[in-house]
Image: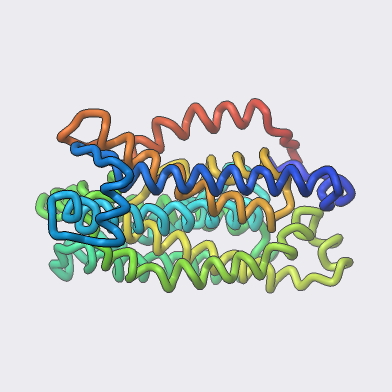
Length: 348
């Protein structure tokens, strides 16, 4: 199985030479995020100067610019910020827990669980609003994550990276089959589901971001708490135990954090591809394998990618829009191929 290349502890330790570079990368990533936020508020079928955007935010006057900024673009910008952060952090956590560079939010069947919850909401309970989908999506994601850890724990090797990945892949395939079976026999469910499944920020009001924010905050806290333990896990279970880390607790915190982040993001915006896969690789290439720095930079780059994709989708064919999930897939594929060519990976 392919595993993330692990630098020696000596090489990864913060050094006088490494820390300034990481700080510079973090500042640059923060500036990119600010640019993406401004672009998300200013650009679209109707471009607005920055001064009009600022005026609409701090001194709304009820004009057209105020309506466009506060009622249309601000909600999707807030959602893009939350979703991008959640997907990027979840990707870092899943790649660390499974020690698999190809791991992403789908790896534990969490995305499939969220999709199953949404389809169930439409087909069985007649839910037809995005705010209604969110709760079913989060519930489906949490149940799928719990099921994966429960089944993996009952295997002979316990919740090891291999068993987690295998059980997650099996659950992803199984739930995917159920979802497609339901969609194939229910045309109404298919019609409503297809708008959600492409992944995007269009049509979401600020209430959707508010619904998922508590889950994202909880997942972010768990990610921060697990960061040092994940550094030790990268050196192997025996070394991690020798360094005094409780590896089961670290895996549980990272796993639950990843499930919360993925469930919230997918439930709110649908499956947005490649953010959880490409951003962790990019962050690791920029600041190394120290998870405190990787998580921080990924939390800045993830929203930048999602917001940038959303803005690009508005500008491609105005007044129509291409969903952000399609743009991230188009951009993420070549970006990931480039990073893989540069990345140092080993096989075990």
